[in-house]
Structures are given as structure tokens and as C-alpha cells.
Image (cartoon, rainbow, N blue to C red; front, side):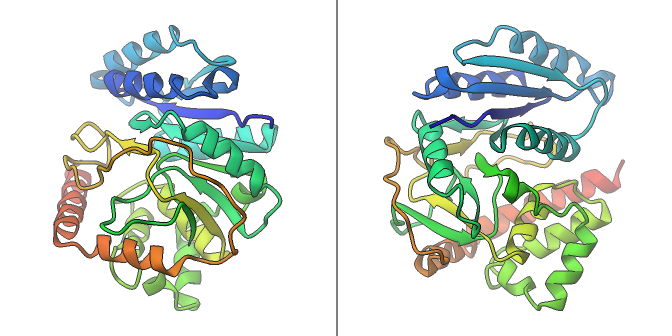
Length: 301
């Protein structure tokens, strides 16, 4: 099984980056994997020192088959950096595993990703593989499909990424034309459509909401693990779009999920479990607080 290259996108969080890389090196397939790191340039003088610290650390990384560091000469911003970086790698390699600098992986993350990429490589209905799953109250299946795509530790093939639509206005217009906005929002449980509108209006620069909407409109599926293989440590006020919360935290899986060929349809029980998680009062308050914080941060610039 040829291993997929790993793309890691970093900016100005040296402590988070160290934790992300340390966890990744503990993966059993790390030594056979190529790691390509995209380091964005500083946006201003205030962030330059941290960017320099991150770049100095990157030069010390080992434990992989190869390590390639791409230092952006200018500040791309996360969306442009990910879109251009993923496009470059999938055009070269045909498949990719994607991480950001605030994602801690289970030691079994790379095995799950590579085995699932191999299993569903020629299955057009499946657009991507995802490593994170929300900490729902209900026990979820070993693996399952949900319609759309996701962004916290994921993988795809060139055929999947070719469906990515960067124009948020076109995505929103098509969602409205097909009357799919409520379904996109998990029957109103989470404001994904508002996130897309926010991207269109410049309140956020989310590539992820466009990736989700692109896959959703194409009626594609993403494979999820029943127990998360990724933890997001970025909700500590350190990120561009984040705040401080532990609402997304869950226990990391202690083994690689058993993969079988599943029916190519969304798992309704898993979808409803996620729907109930989205509707929890704590998550609703957290989501509102994060949205308001980023909104006022944006308009104050």
C-alpha cells in the first residue's frame, strides 16, 4: 500500500506545532510517510517572531521518510494556503492526508487514513476520509458515512478535490435553488449556511465551509471513525477563528478502526446522534460566542 503524503499547514503557534508533530511521529506509519509542511509568512511585525520560531523548529523535525518545508514568501492566509497546497500535492500524488498545526492525532490515525484511502480509492461516491468525530453521547458504529466533507484531520483523492468549488456565492445559490440549506445545517441544528454567508461577506475566510458545501451539493459521502482519532487543541484563544472551549474534546481512539465495505449511504443513526450533539445548549452557546467574537474582531479592523 503506497502511503499518502501528509500536508501540514502551520503559521505562528510554535507550541501547538510541536505537539502536533510529536503526536504524528508516534504514528506507526510515520517513518514511511512523506511530510510536506507549508509555513505561512507573517502577516505583520507582531507575528514575525513566532513565525520565525516555528520555522526554526521545522528544520529540526525528523522521524518521517522525508520532510519538505515550503516557506511562503508572503502571508497567504489559511484558506489560500490550504487550497493551493492541497491542489499542488493531489495533482502530483493523486491523494493526500491534511493536518493543521493544532491537531493532535492518535497513533493509529495514519493507518486508518491510508487503509481507508486504499479501500475507497475507486469508489466515486466517497469524497474523503475524516479522523475527527464529535463527542456524541451515543456510541457510534465502528465507521460510517455522513454526507459532505470535513476539516479536522482528513484525506482525499484528486478526483475528490477536483469537485471543490471556491466560489461561496455559487455554492449558496445552488443550495438555495435545490432547497438544501436546512439539510446542510443538520435540520437547523448547526449554522453551516450562516458560516457560508459569513465567508461570502468577508466575516470569515473559511475554506472548510466551502469544502463541506461542495461535497454536499455533489451528494458525496465522507467516512468517519466511531471514536475520534484527532483532538483539536486550538480552542484556547490562539487561533485566527477560534476562542476558548472544551466542548469539542473527546477521548482519542486506542486502536485503528476495523474497515469493511459499507453501504454507500449516509448512516441515519449517526447523523441523528450528531444532530443531538449540535442541539445541546452548551454547544449552541459556545457557537454563538465564537461567532460573535469573530464578527466583532472582523468589523473592528
